[in-house]
Length: 591
Image (cartoon, rainbow, N blue to C red; front, side, top):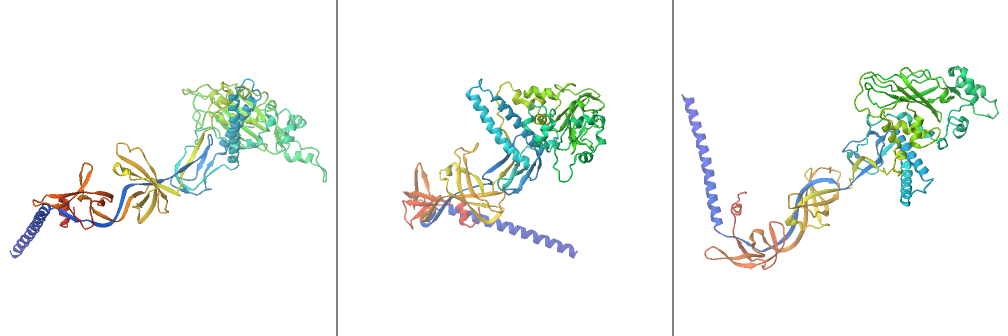
């Protein structure tokens, strides 16, 4: 029983304490309200005193780049690898991307082909206007500059940061399996471009070619004849060299003859099969190396479709390919084999029977089985005789679809009915970099304050992420157009970027729009307004109403106190009606 009695006593004590606490709080609030009411019935008063006034306009924003720049490359070049990501810091001179060398080759050949066509067009300007001639010359200058740039990229296929900064965006000029054929094995074609072979048959006189370029395998007519009854494997490069080597001290009279390759029946090209992946390489032999690309596919073969393989064969040292008519092939499933030997390289265009099944829709103008490379190039370049290596390279690199329209696009300059040079001078953005020397903070300023803001004024910037530090900036731009749906105007502040800052950090800015030292001041709430007139009360009537109106002039204000430039003297008393919040504040109550 004693335990139950103790519990009841404890509960009663707790309840009494709660009641006393609540009652005390209510009594305190009641007394505070009575005092506040009493204060409200009396006017507030303040004496005119001297102090310093600093007027500011404040706003918030984010740290952003003051300036950024784009690193561009000529249109058509393909980025094979990007070495940076968005947000990375790069320094001037850093390598930021690698360029696919094959795309550079393609671009050089394309530009050179167009330049050659313009040169031909300018040989006869009798039917051209001065404007058309000027167009051609302008395009010539552009192409020459472009080739110079592309050649620099060819020698060093990388993209370098030209300035330091932070990566803000990556461009779209990237490598894609569907973007075109893989021509990485054809980069050496640049070294074989011989202007002397344009419009000529390089197979007609191999000895002439060897005089111009000793690095190319040489074909001798006698060796070709002698090789007709002997397989190429019977005579090795070492044997040939041994037979023609001079005795010690002698100067060789002629270049050793190369073993001529005519038997290409060992070349294996697997016929396309619906759903299968295209053959991607050529088996190397003692005589040559090779590569293959396929027109119209980048993944697997479609059903019911005719495909063409473009094969390039390079002779090894001591070997040379015979003429097109002497080459022998054995390629099961092929319907057409068209070989060409240009500059020592053997190009073979092999068209196969259509794969089994129903062809997908949208095949377009498919290449016919008797399609001839030489006839096609001659039709679009206007050249006579054997086409140049440049024409072949352009054909190979442009052939990303097995239809005539796509191939013809490689020669759109010469095939254009307008007779005008191309105006394509586009560039692709590889990367965008924001400079870090200077940054911007943009804030919104209300229409009531904007007229006090001027370019060149000083602003103090603080960052939440960098406490206890202030940074000094300068107003560099003020918008004359209010932000959408508001009466606020954008103000840009420029400042030097600190190592601790990051783009996107929130920042607060305070702009000093006015400053006055040791001036007469009163609180802002003591001012009265009637129309365009500003005045204060300097006395209290017997009935408690305010009187003694004195017109005053004001100066700088910080939003709490205001400068009085005329109408009052130091020590004068000014009266004003207090608000409820002011009365409670006078009692020490936070509001």
